[in-house]
Length: 518
Image 1 (cartoon, rainbow, N blue to C red):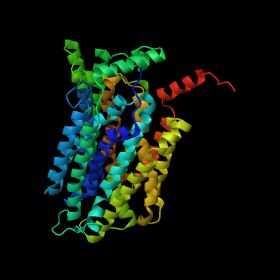
Image 2: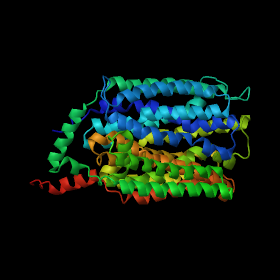
Image 3: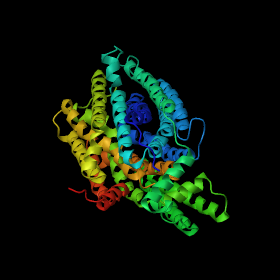
Image 4: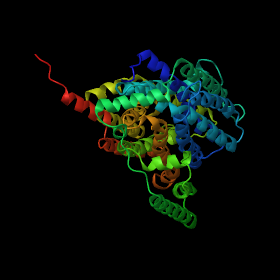
């Protein structure tokens, strides 16, 4: 008894919502820094303003994952979160271009990112729920395709609004140009439509059906359900207390050093992160000592200590991969303008033209990601998922470094080819590897916890990149992309040490298969 294979058209319908979600993320990553700069933010303040995005993901995704594992309504298990998250995101995107002050824009970033995370998080678990193991790489590749397609459109919308539809690309009153405002309005409508297509065109397996499928898969392999996705034992109260005290002490000590030495204030984010993590462990220990009923908080804290081996190994890969991507999202606009176009300031016609070109460049890497999305599984089948992902990470390193040494901004579309290839792989290969190492009844919560290893490098980047650029890189933001290239190399090396349960199972099956008679 296995999950039935899903037709390719059904897989595309199941993943189509990601087209809309990525339009939302493309508006966020490609144009929010522009909104901040228009409202008066200086270059050094950009990382701390961007702290909202990873923080909301850190909080929202494990909670939504926990809740979606336990949800069953008329819309199903995951789809209610697609539905309500899309409504909230759409409303936020309509309000964002009306921001009249920097604090308002920063607040809208929190709201929009929270809503996007509510919509997006269950999509990863959705593929694990609905597809048999042999089709999951294709499912995540389909998500990568729609992410690339949505990112292409979302990044190109400002240029399209100005050049195809005649909306003014210059600011008349010191605010956002009309083409940018229209970009947000059109993007919001497209996001809502795409997500609703997935919500109303796809049905879900019930929790009982999923349990039956996992039990059948375990029997087919001759193992127990627990052995199918083994996890370390639950942490003791003493371990929670020890970890809590260590992290709380380290965080407070570091924050005191930042204050006493007069270091960059963005470093408070690191100290605060350590301290909060330690405090959460102490709260979990206290709740467990009281013997209270296991709730969402306690279960999430416990599961963080019980990560499957493959997930722990992938955490290192994700850290370096997303540190690199965040460096580009923060500094691509300012870095390319200052390095390739000279010292031009926001709100001038020269700046607006350069910024529109960079938005178009972003659409190139999304388009490349869409084009290569289904080629990466072919490479993985010919080699392995680990090798395919490592190769793509190295290609990404070349793409990032070329932002520095290519001779002019007009040829940076060549850089974006490498960025697009690595982006497609980042969005599919780690999840394809991970989904085979997770228990079905915890697919949502572990996909949410896996987001920690996307969020933490972004918090580190938001804390350190401003300091590194101003103090060590001579105030040249383009060199932040060089740091990103080095980070991709580290991720590629770490990928080679990941245990891929799915690849190991295929090798065992192949080795055990009889040799056909000639």
